Image 1 (cartoon, protein in one colour):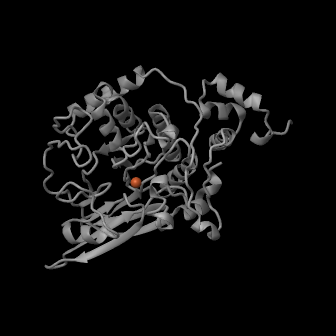
Image 2 (tube, protein in one colour):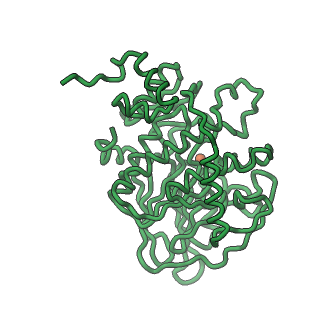
Image 3 (tube, helix red, strand yellow):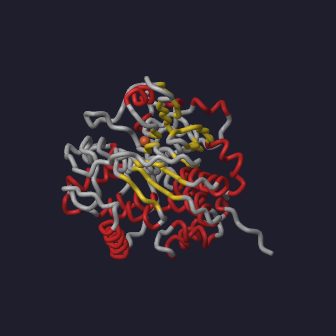
Length: 394
Ligand SMILES: [Fe+2]
């Protein structure tokens, strides 16, 4: 039997031919070549001399390494006809119109969102009285994952998390938002700057989002996991709404496809800043203060727990933390937990190089809820996930 060739041993012409044959679809080309998708992405990134280096499962000595994305050249993605996607989006919207999910918004049908980032204020029905459950609920909370087409390592993280969900079978799974960087529509990088030259296209961002989402869902689907799946939009996700708001001709194109990718994989979602309640505990990307700004400071968990009147799970800062504040009254207390991030270990995005560094956390949270409160939470680090499930991810 002929020995199977490794990627490094394969003639470039053969790899190119496979990509050409599949219209640039890396997943299908990898299948045809008999290599892993992440391996092929990494190979292509190396070929295009992308200066992306991420230390995954590196020795502790590497903990001080901050990785900066200096240049991201990503493989060309095929431009598919948007028609089937738009039909799927329209079908999803019809569903939402017919269901109680639909809430009035003067901004159209992409759903309401907070005006903090856009200077536009949506109106929505107030949510009065969070449903409280006395039975034990187990939730897997996934923090900010910040996918980027130049960072294929996030796919491995998603696969590891998918295997963790398959092994632990929580009743609910919540991704706390900022699933992708959405650098294509980055609000902080003007298109006439040098930095903007390495922005991916919206199409590439969406395709990369879909591929990462596939990696997360595949192990769960294969194991028949029936957990509810929910995504709370983050500030980076809301950049898409902001972009469409300033480019009205494209309204619904990118947000619709993003929502469609989530919906097709069985994920519901709530808008940026909106609470999603499970057993009386509110899940949100980041709680907004009374001025509509994200709760901030070095340890926002403290100020949130001081002000809030129900338990909260949030992300945004990429730093795991838990805070319990006892209030006046009988058995009255509030617990606030920060999920931390779910990015590759030691990876620090360009936007956070000088502010977050090695203080970032990488992993997921197993949370126990009963009596309307967070009773326990456990950070399962990305390294622990690698130790437990690494052998299942090629
Ligand atoms: Fe984030």
